[in-house]
Length: 303
Image 1 (cartoon, helix red, strand yellow):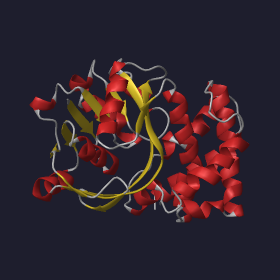
Image 2 (cartoon, helix red, strand yellow):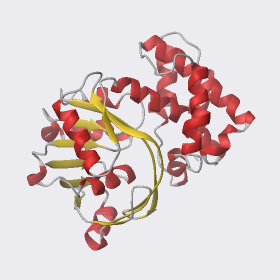
Image 3 (cartoon, one colour):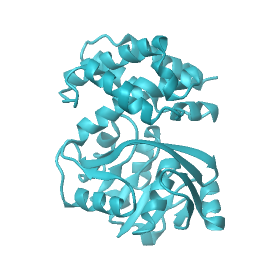
């Protein structure tokens, strides 16, 4: 089995490392990470295990990897279109997995291949150094499915391979619902944790929780307008799950947006709260909290 991970950052390199024990893997990553992997391997610590992993990694896609069985895109959502255009000849007609944050990546990938696989992962990956990642928390198994719905042999085979690699993974026929469910989690916690510079556990404070509640209620109205059936019938049911299940499991995690802002990078806000706000406008729905937090993150990006 040949697997290529495109746009491999913390998530992509860690998944590539785990898969390298059960498949042939190549990761397309930044030069400093590729150089570090060639020199001493990819270093992993945390709940997914500890050790050094060696696998093929470079800034480009060598010819021998242009016929991979799967392409997994783990780039920031802001780079999805560019990644697809750069590797269009390789991914056309092949299974392409979006292992990314937010809403809209699968639609972009779908303009390049008719074999799009959506995926959802709620796991904390934190850089320690070049090609060195600490896996801090995991709130649920990875979910994979044909996008927008259904499953097939390609999905089932990849889920099984991920399990062999030691990653909790499940095939699902309702991956769009799973992606929206993760987006709820990200919209509720990611930007607010970044703006306030606190780990997720701190957001149960009553003042922060009032904002979280408003963000989730707006997102629910937008999901309903989009025809997305969420697993929880009402926002209050999800908020209870968020507070009693997801936040305790990821209480120590710091927002990926916080990490991006600290490094002067553009965030994925437009694929999270920004996407909710844009869809709200499309349906004539008021979403002031999602709009406000989106504008605050854009302000922080410019500092």
